[in-house]
Length: 462
Image (cartoon, rainbow, N blue to C red; front, top):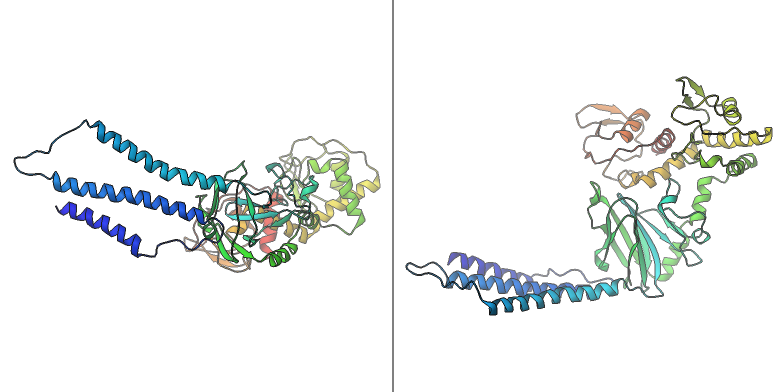
């Protein structure tokens, strides 16, 4: 009897809790109030089964309780009872599945006039892309992803040149307009979730998933990742700002296009000699083997190369100056840099062309601004800025503002001065020296020398 009373309290308490406690979700801020209705129907059906099963257990405990000298009647075969159970269970399952499937069908059946917005998820940050004046987004893919192009927009697609890129975690949308969300992931499984809009969909690497909704009221709503995506999952948050169409258009007009970002990254040099060197590098195919942005390449990258010291294949060192660069262009096999194959052919260039190429390499090697900008692009592309703030605000990892030259206390109680050597070590082997108060959640990064140099330059500039 005591156990029957416990079950009765559980059943009655659960029903009263749902009837008297204001547990319901906040009012939907989109057109998908039908999702709430489906969830409520699911609650009613599962609640009815819960109450029915609970009451059955109570009746069974009382009616078939142990009594001296009596035994409960056993009826292991009851076709009638089996058919009743099959029928009731089938009705319950259909009642659970059918409404959800009907709503999901509407969720992915996008209106023809929907405004397309692309969301790109990456550990542990968001980025967004809007169509430009032509109303069409350009092609994208993993082949074009790089430090200067983190969303992988096809630079050769004319439709993508006016695409609007939003690199931060803030998304803005106009109220009262159908929006189709195109969802991509750069690394692992994520889930784009805005609770108040009832908008939720997995982001699968290699696929583009989608859904649509209509924001019905202005306001600020949190964007969450609802799929565990690694140790920094809890920090993968963003903010959706829904505003009137006029305000949205003003904000959108202030954001950079893909073409503008590419122009800024190239620096648009005013020196005609540098520009001629860039054109020569493109014409002769130099940029196919030598990167200009610090990314890995078949041959030594040109960013930060001029003035640096390189180790040759015979173990000796050489300073990269005009004489060495001239020799490497005219007779590339003479002194090979360690770690690179002797695949470069000799070029027979006149003095003017040689000087133009040298001017380009000098501009990439001596420009601190170029190095810092490349480091910023790498930090954005690699997801560093999801865990390291640059404005002094709190973050899961040590903030980078004023970090270089600062003394830090490590987890073992020792003190260390943050210099370039420590920064390099922390990037390549982050678990070796953990700063006190921070969790060891940072993955190791396999970067080449040019990328390391650029990233350290960016951190030091904060």
